[in-house]
Length: 183
Image 1 (cartoon, rainbow, N blue to C red):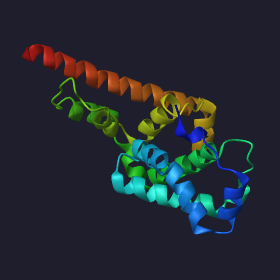
Image 2 (spheres, rainbow, N blue to C red; image 1 turned 135 degrees about the vertical axis):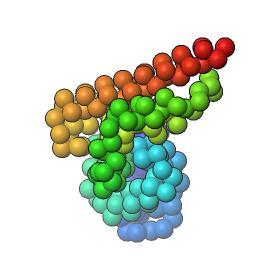
Image 3 (tube, one colour; image 1 turned 180 degrees about the vertical axis):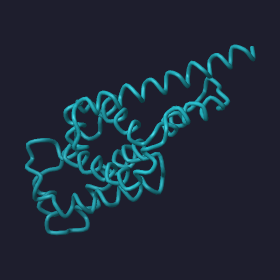
């Protein structure tokens, strides 16, 4: 269940529009965990996630009058968070050019146990592939929505998702083989 399906009432919106701290704090308290978790999943860095969270709330509070109320406030905020994360990923575009083969061979060296943390595997994915995987599989966005956010084609989203899954599958298979050899 997504916590982004929550909304705020018209009174809170009006108070935030006027810059009232209590209303801003109420909205922040309601959504901060979801915003941070999404940002962290996309960026895999606590500091970057905190920056994206802060920037997202600042932007949301500045532009709250643009929220039409036709979708839950949380979904509108989620789009802001995703865009902030994408901006951060684009800013660090040198990471996007990492070779998947180099990553795969590097990750073959990971000592695997069955309590393996998914975060560790996600962190090993290139940022672009990881963010598409998260947006599609967890946030439930369509390939068209993801492509639109990146300013790319739908095939871009599909290929990045396939690449993510292929890398994760390869890493897990390699680790399971190593685990079986040791037992």
